[in-house]
Image (cartoon, rainbow, N blue to C red; front, side, top):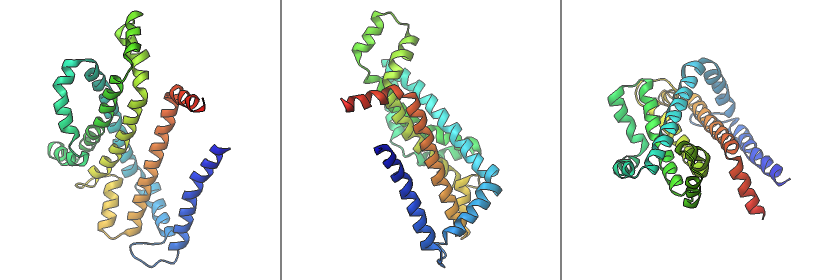
Length: 257
């Protein structure tokens, strides 16, 4: 019953805010705050038809490829770094140097090296999204109970079995926390990379609308970015709940006891 109430509250507040926006802006003649009806008309025309294939799909493709490359690379390198002391000592200074650079500041470097093509955007997203998951993976593996690891030695598990059956599940919750931060970072860098130079994508079209004083188009782009961000987080949370079902259930039982 409590969960149902929270669902109703979570859906009800956005609906109320949209209703306030709709009726509050219905008679607006302000250039910068057009009626919501006009924005939705432009949203439908632009993002569901004219620019769906040429811009929306391109942005989503770049985001998916960049995030997937970052997630896979960060987990693999994180395992190697956490389990191999010489590697950890060798790469720690470089990692801490690079993680201190704001992700958006990396975009001009990739433009210089790779131009304005999709390769630049995917590489920018991948590098920027790499560090949150990498750091979470290393920290998660370092926090694994040593007694648990010792048990795997007693049972003479092979290294691959030890990683897959004990260490990866134990570090899983922290890795997923890093992945969630990486997803948000990837989203920000995707938009930033599209706003620099003549390019395709939702960010580029939204910036062009703002510069051309096509304000309803600009609001429509912002609305689409919000919806994509919401959908991406929702999908990520569903995957996390599926993969970490055992962990979520154990925490629920711990709170209930």
